[in-house]
Length: 313
Length: 313
Image 1 (cartoon, rainbow over the protein chains, first blue to last red):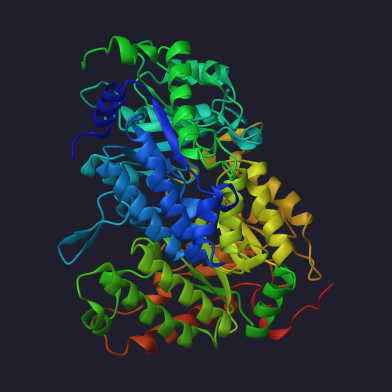
Image 2: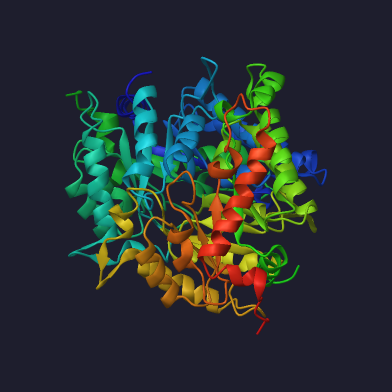
């Protein structure tokens, strides 16, 4: 498989936008017809409802956006049945030409990290055969355990043309408790950002960006701008757009001048842009995705992706 | 369900030791007879082999030790089939009176963290009914995202008599890259330790310890002693014993003078204390568990658990 950053860059250019649709299914927010159809009081029923809902979302957004990001927690909360759903959703997304970022925020040490990485990317090796598990294009990874815990993800991603997005500065209100602590003159998240830069520089593709990216919330544009300036070759995955309060203006600082460098995620703001009783929910999802694409194009350098794509270096 | 720290304290006293057996199944290390019996070249076969192996391990260790710790990554690497196995292993462990620490090192923000917590502990609420998923006694949690990402785990654990163990200073060689960074005069891990102390103090049981614990590797006894002194009311989950290089002497600093306060994990050193061709593997597992119990009793204040249990405060 080709280099992840090159595949991501090609996908952003092909669709002319940098929107990622987050798949965070929640039972009580599903359209009422799906709740009724699948609501048999079991987690299996919830998993089937999540599957139908996510596949219908994919049908709507696949022609519009380049990337989707399933949140593992909501599928895991249905137990094994939910993880069968997750596999099917990831498979369908790939078939529709979407890139997939699996949002698991996983990490552990050494051989355990290797098990997570194998499952996320190329698959688990067994008697000379490789068995895919999630087969995602990228995985979100937590940095707290340090380099040797990141290494298996780096190697596994490199071998299989996949990417990782490492949490740098997240978008939640309490993110600063540890991430903003001042260590040797700069906040902890800048230390993590420097490590991400080094890892990205070991994995630069033809597009000039690396396959190791950073998760940076849109809650604080100043922080975003500082990290953008320090990490010119790193893709940012930017959560916080929509339900979490940020708009296009807050994400502008995540983009490079050429319109590349960022993937802006919106979960509830697109997939739950309706009330459960709304029978025209699919039209609302499509309208919300289109509105976000337009807002980003108007406000950020991302507009250049659609109008004057820069050539690969 | 009773308070987690009280249940843990009672379990340590009842068994007279603080040994936790880590369940980290790996295909290539399994007894050859299990590899042959289940090796059909599918991940489902691997999952069935893991299930038989873990259940046989539970039969051996349940009379000896108080706690087991399944590592989610190895079950997740088998896909949905592996997670059915994980459910069955957790269920069997509970039936045998073992406490279960689910090692997932999970974390995410707000409602996503809530989904992980619901799945780990009491279960997922659906139309007024609660559906258990993992139903573990405790979960390991990563602190990087800060307080509001820990809060759902704290609340969910408190409501259901469960516990969490927050990564403070891990046992891997590169742990110091971020965890040892000096922030405002003390290393990052001491900032996390202080937060754990505060959370534990909100959750003190009759035994005098809290249901929020700390993961602290046995690799560095000095660090262990410093955190022990600063966090007198906090249970430590101590990995690193056995295959990772630490012995009883290295873990001594994790215990309080009354013999409580620590749970020492050993995974491969017990469950893979044999070679795959060894048909007497179960005897070796039992011997390895017994040897670790004896070593800890001889070297650490843990010996007092078996000889002169302190009374609950």
